[in-house]
Length: 309
Ligand code: ADP
Ligand code: MG
Image 1: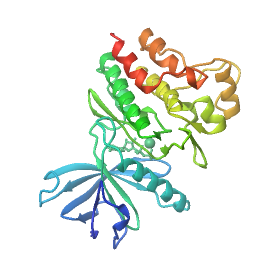
Image 2 (image 1 turned 90 degrees about the horizontal axis):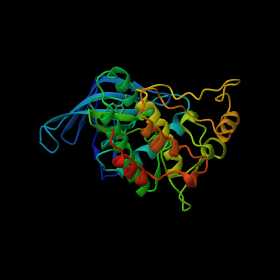
Image 3 (image 1 turned 90 degrees about the vertical axis):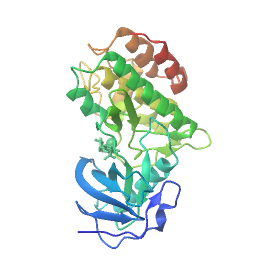
Image 4 (image 1 turned 180 degrees about the vertical axis):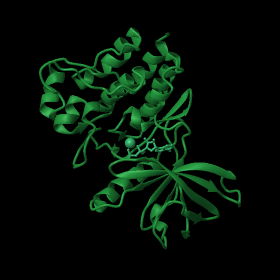
């Protein structure tokens, strides 16, 4: 099956200009403004979307002769309209972002199914990478990953965006010493009070959520800092599930129970493989119950650079 599109929206253009004449399937070819995007294989799929690897070439030479790309589409199901609104927001947010620690959007193909075309990040998501390469990754590397994530998050905060899904599964590994933040599916612009209050029916990643987020649905950059702490836990435990251990009950049974456990001071333990100073200086401060007591991403960058392993 071959698809031809009238146009390709590159970063700065309006993504609504495009029309396609067919549906999307594996091995389709987008023919776009001199660029071809060939869809290769599926590399990820979640509740709402699917991600494919693709190969983009531009014989005209406008872009690099040939490069690998990742193509994200929302799954076609009954909830399409809500999904589409969310996906359009994800795209609009990504279009404003350009930073070494944030996955780069390349373009958007508008059609019966919208496709977000982004750079392909070679080593995939961090949670898998940690499990696979556990024996060869050094703690210096882990600390560099932590620094990269903090830098990307600090940039997002400057852009008045809260990510709301910061977790190892949404960090992509570009090289052994370089990671990028991805998946802006839950990201939102903050309101004038510098926060966002949810209105979504989506399933939320509660285990990564700060107390103010899980009960009141409030999100500040300092709520992302809490999730960053949980992501550090994943990082320094080489991809362990961040499960709060609780003697008598299951804290994740519902949000209120979980919130109570946190209020009572329960926190994730120091992973066996994590240096004490990383746990005490970096992770634990991210989990201050009161938001104002947590370090900002700017401060976290300072703390990370002050740590010598
Ligand atoms: P979802 O909203 O379904 O969680 P994600 O954006 O997190 O979608 O992507 C799902 C998975 O696809 C990721 O965990 C990762 O393994 C893979 N993936 C996504 N984007 C890229 C990319 N740019 N390069 C390489 N792999 C990617
Ligand atoms: Mg994801």
